[in-house]
Amino acid sequence: MSEIKLSAVHSLKTACSNCSVMELCLPLGLTGQEVARLDTLIVQRVKVKKGATLYRAGDPLRSLFAVRIGSFKTSVLSIDGREQTTGFHMPGEMLGLDAISNELHACSAFALEDSEVCPVHFSQLEKLAQELPSLQHSLNKILSREIVRDHDMLMMLGNMNSDERLAAFLLNLSQRLSLRGYSSSNFVLKMRREEIGSYLGLRLETICRGIAHLRDQGLVEVSGRDVRIHDMEGLKQLIAGCNRPPLR
Amino acid sequence: MSEIKLSAVHSLKTACSNCSVMELCLPLGLTGQEVARLDTLIVQRVKVKKGATLYRAGDPLRSLFAVRIGSFKTSVLSIDGREQTTGFHMPGEMLGLDAISNELHACSAFALEDSEVCPVHFSQLEKLAQELPSLQHSLNKILSREIVRDHDMLMMLGNMNSDERLAAFLLNLSQRLSLRGYSSSNFVLKMRREEIGSYLGLRLETICRGIAHLRDQGLVEVSGRDVRIHDMEGLKQLIAGCNRPPLR
DNA sequence: CGGGACATTGACGTTACTCAAGAGAGGTGG
DNA sequence: CCACCTCTCTTGAGTAACGTCAATGTCCCG
Image 1: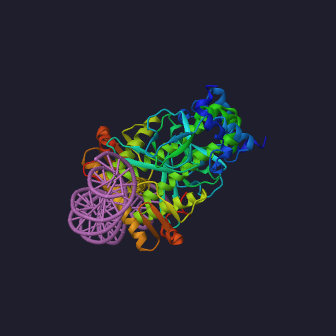
Image 2: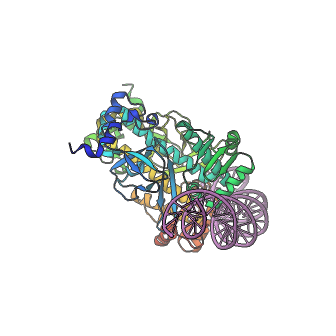
Image 3: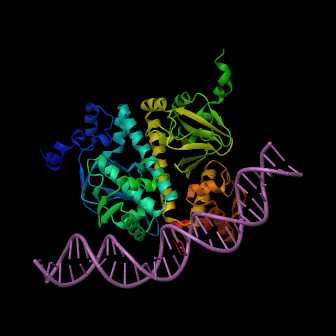
């Protein structure tokens, strides 16, 4: 009886098969039965308030986290306090992959809005993957995709100017939101200018100026956090030649 | 009888257990018996001449490659011909990890000197990993370590000035060579200035000037490809915490 | 020994950073 | 509900860092 009290509300709904981003997440490529077994690993979803920390660099790896609702940023902090944002993460994406290497989280994860994640106990996941080849394959792919994504970022930081980086960033957001059923031309930024800058290797003022440049070219309209893309093709042309299709 | 002709020389020696970098490579954490099974996947080593291509972006993923002897660079090319070097790889490191994601190589790999790799057929590797939990764990760790490495690169490109990047690059080489039994203070660069620049997001002239700066501070002596580190601590201080005198 | 690739250095230009001031947005308490 | 405070965003002016262009030097490799 007493066991119910904590997880009753959650346990009924804790099921990948119910999740709106299942086909973007860990269950990708699994059969219904396999997904059901994966479900058993996710004991309880966790809500994370806007601004709260999901984990910090140096924390031991217990679980990976699948973003279910909301969005996160991950970043590493240098000794003197400078921050490099390593990614923005939306529903269906996995957090904590860099911790597998040393069993310690290498970066910190912060919620950009009220969010919800599905913790997946990592050693249990490895054990289950041992039994389910397609789960193992899925995990391999997710890890590899993160590497590809990081290489795209290296290309951006190494070879693109500020306006191109900003255009690529907006296109990337647009595409990922579109995959999740949202408008590709009309969306809201969940992060501050400073955080965009930290991600793109630029100062916040440079982000502001970049927005002004794109606006002056009639490509986008940005009002605070609201983004409206007016000329998707124009944006793509701006970065064409620096990268293949949009990003990632 | 006829089967012997091609691989006779190799098959005798093709064994991870003989390999000088075994404990840095895929076999890490495996028992002797497990290593023996891994050996069966590596049919034949492949020699790659200096300047030759091991694989190109877009090639289908057949095998991952473990560097055995020599060194490689991997890079992605933009449509307009700009190159972003994504890594330099030395013995014991795996090539092709980014191909798992789409079953297509996302970057190209070139030998920087006469080299030798151990191809590991990927689907066979996955199958074997299904039977050997520690092999699977090893692969997960290798993938995750690559992500951590890429995040370090992002920190470098996003937050460090040219001299710091160069210092960090030299220290990184020094450390990896040391791990492999070579001198940490006295080594030979296998890549050109332009390739270092492509890796660090800088022009080749900036690399030259950076070398001059480090030389003027008495930290290193570089003559062509020969590097002699005179003040390891000084180099480390230069990048410690990413702090700098007057920074960009 | 000659030629081509690679490396170095200088002069100058451009981009993005720094510093600064002010405007806007959002949350809180009176 | 408004006033206030703080955080965030925007824009300008001046500067530092890196890129570009160019000339020259050096090292291999054939």
